[in-house]
Length: 337
Ligand SMILES: Cc1cc2nc3c(=O)[nH]c(=O)nc-3n(C[C@H](O)[C@H](O)[C@H](O)COP(=O)(O)OP(=O)(O)OC[C@H]3O[C@@H](n4cnc5c(N)ncnc54)[C@H](O)[C@@H]3O)c2cc1C
Image 1 (cartoon, helix red, strand yellow):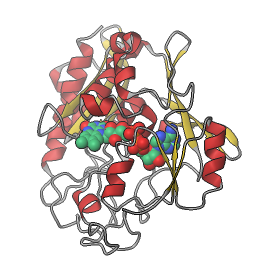
Image 2: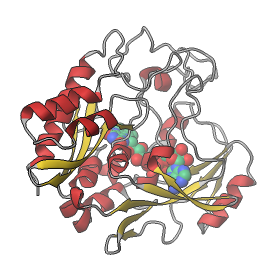
Image 3: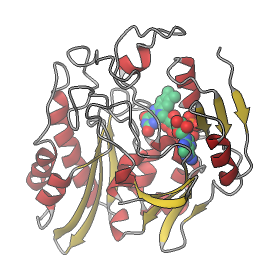
Image 4: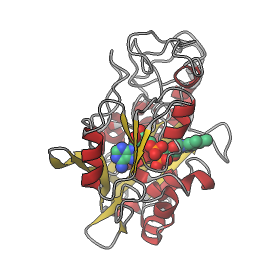
C-alpha cells in the first residue's frame, strides 16, 4: 500500500484550491468505485486524495425547470429512480440501470461515471501488480510504451475512433446517453466556472491515448445539464453484453426520435462499447432523418453508423452486432410515445 494524503473539503471551491496546492499527484474521489479499483491495480498512484463526496448540495436533482440538472455527486441509482427521468427520459434511466450493479449504483456518482477509465484487459491487468514494471505495454497507462491489444486478445476492443497507438473502448453507458441528448457539464476550475458540452469532454486517442479528457488540472464537474426535449419520451438505451445481469457493453445504442408525422424529423443516436470515446453516430442520424420507420430504414441507419469501422482479429463481429443494436434501438424507441 502506498501512502497518500486524504482531504475532505467542504465546498467545490475548497476542493479546487486543495487540488491546486497538492501538486501533480492530486486526484478527486467521489463514490470511489473506479478510483479505489485503479489504485489497487497500481494504475492510479495519487499523492493526495481529495474526497468530494460530502460536499453539500452537489447531489441535487432538479427536473422541474427548462432543463434537467443533475449535481455531479447525485448517485447513479438516485438519478435512474427519479420519477421524471424514469417516465420521460428512458434513454437516461436505462443507461444508468443497465450499468454496473445495484450496489455499485448506490455508491457511484453520475459525475464520476463520466471519467471512469477503460476496461481494456491490457490497460488494467498489465501493470505488473505492485511493481512499476508493466507486464504488457499500454500507451494509455504508460505513454509511449506500445499497445499489446493491437494484434492481441482484441475481442472487446473498439472498431471506431481507433489509432495505431490505442484501440481501448470507452466504457461508460451514461455518457453515451448524455451525448445523444446534447448534454453539457458545469465545470469549476482555478479560473472560475465554464460550460462544457459532453461531446467536448472526450478526446480521440490519436498518438496520445494517455490524455483522455479535456478537463484542465484541478477542474471539477459540478453538474450535468440535459436540455428538455420531447424526443426523450421516444427513446431508449439498448445494451448488448455477454451477461445480461451485469457486464460492460459489447455494443450499445442510445436513440431518441423526434417525429414529424410518420417520418423522422430528427434522430439522436450515439454508440457505446464500440468506440474509443462515446460516439455520435452522425451518419446514422443523417440516414434516418426524413425516413418512414421500417425494419429496413432502421437497419440502413445501423449500417451507416459503422461504415467507417475497422476491426482487428477477434472483434469484427461488433460491426454487424453494432448495426443491429442501432436498428433494434430505433425500433424500440419508435414504439414508445
Ligand atoms: C464491477 C464493476 C462493473 C461496472 N459496470 C459498469 C457498466 O456496466 N457501465 C458503466 O457505465 N459503468 C460501470 N462501472 C463503472 C462505475 O459506474 C464507475 O466506477 C462509477 O460510475 C464511477 O463513479 P464514482 O463516483 O465511484 O467515481 P470515482 O471512482 O470516485 O472517480 C472516478 C474518476 O472520476 C474523477 N471524479 C469523480 N467525480 C468527479 C467530479 N465531480 N469532478 C471531477 N472529477 C471527478 C475521479 O478523480 C476519478 O478519476 C462498473 C464498475 C465496477 C467496479
